[in-house]
Length: 72
Image (cartoon, helix red, strand yellow):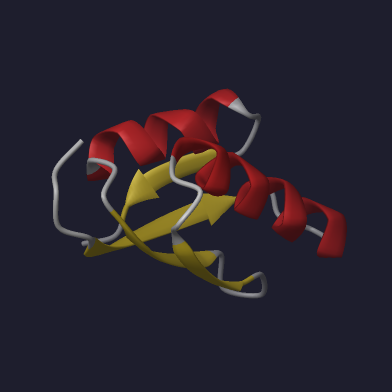
């Protein structure tokens, strides 16, 4: 983990309902309880301000069952 929070944007596939959105938020907040998370489920865009490394965050979301990759 780094010391300073940074904004990470992920493209996440498979979020089809509010429960999915909450599940992704839980995964991110498990990695960083202080993370600020905004999700647009219609586009699959996830923005998080966190101290967790971007690749680690994408891997955590992917392991939870949602295909996640860093947004270009």
